[in-house]
Image 1 (tube, rainbow, N blue to C red):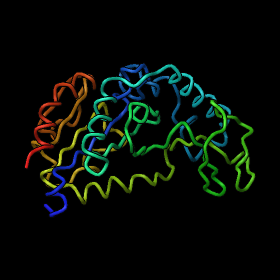
Image 2: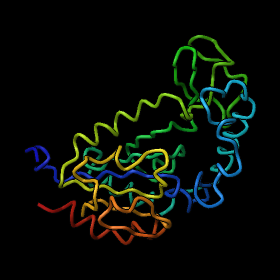
Image 3: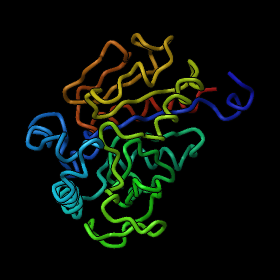
Length: 248
């Protein structure tokens, strides 16, 4: 452990999937009757073909916006935001696959969104990411830099699209020590696997790797598995996380 980290204490890395927001009423994508059982990924979330299906793409993501309009942060979001406020953004790293803003609305100060968000647009002609200027995505939105319209898409990362924030997962692997904590919440590990997040020496049932999911997968990577929804699982782990984060 470096001297700087010794002063700060262990770090907490939290990797969340759709299960974190499910209790807020936002649909999951893969588990149960998830969105991808009802929609074609190739039609609405494929970077190679999206321009051929532009109207369907915009409709699909506007449905996601309207779905989350009445959603509120749940207790799991609030617990994670409280931890980040308590121990700081340097020690509590929140990394999510989710495109909603419920962590931020719960008070989280910094969240890495691996797959983009529903609040921005991306011009694929000049690579400018810019905020959308209305509640819904508009098909006639022009890029403020180059003026393109047909090349503008929702700011969600599609399959086969470059995802710059994934560099942070690589850095996380390199910097994580045996003293740090890792919690995975509500993910099926079908897009990002534990091997891509954890150092190789922590690949097998490490005592500081925690998994929270009502239908847990890849359990061989975790020393503690909570087969619960996010709110219950985090509540069950709170005292243990506190003890480990304040250990000297």
